[in-house]
Length: 389
Ligand code: APR
Ligand code: PHB
Image (tube, rainbow, N blue to C red; front, side, top):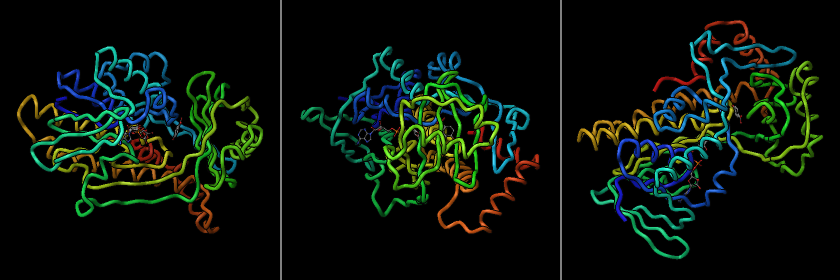
């Protein structure tokens, strides 16, 4: 087979890139290791920045997001018995949209299928050949049958565990990583959200987050030990612990019920440089990971897609490689800022096993400052709603 852009990975990055390119008449093929049902069973964060919303609009997949998503113009932050509001609309004139990542992925699959887009599922052993030459091609297998794609460019959208990043030689690649000494236990429950806004809670017992999907579907998280397993946590134990970590008036209002999903995610900050090697371009989780505090994962993937999409359009429409040549530098400049915000917000809100009383007082002092200082709130709001592309 032949295509212009071969895209490895049928997660949100790969699908969004493929759909955007299709709108500009640029041909692509998406290769996905899992089945579509498996990809759609993954539950991830659901707060969208303005830039991602604009990309979904441009891709023609924003109707359901606008109909079913919830615009949020601020967030709540609690510590001890204090709770305060950071007003995004006041500080930035912008809102974020709460709409599940799984729903975006579903909308993208629907759009690719409606356009007869080529997606191969259950591909194995994808190998990228000649990425640093003029003739790049991929080989892979589907149910034991060997296949080949010749292409102009490869977009490595295959997540943290994919092959694309590993294809870049070690003497070219530099990796930066921080692993946090705790995880997030997340549950989904068919109960009304405790508050209209998200609540990020710093408590003596550890971090908690109250989020939502819709009027009768809530998403809650509590910081947990990395040695915990979801089975260690009964629904009752989860709700009791959550109530202890959020302000008393919120705990009183919390509606509990059976959980329909329960899982534990580790927290990691990770960046690889460069994000381009010859004709291979890394995008999204393949190149960087953020801890989920602040929900920057998908939004950072979206800014990569934006730069790569425009670089490819310039190449095919104007014969200029300026955008592609600048891709790694531009994408990384924004990635590092999102990394900083996610690291800062994570550091501010969690209990660390080796935290001293001094460290704790520093968190409280910073939270007090954020509560009472307009400039600090503005800086937080600007990062939360998304820095410009
Ligand atoms: N061959 C083909 N597909 C692969 C391979 C491979 N060797 N390795 C991984 N994949 C697929 C995975 O099965 C997955 O569906 O690539 C896809 C990558 O999707 P994600 O991990 O969701 O990554 P991405 O599309 O970059 O999404 C952005 O940022 O922080 C996160 O929550 C956020 O998941 C979101 C992500
Ligand atoms: C979520 O709704 O899953 C969510 C929201 C905000 C975050 C992380 C996760 O910071």
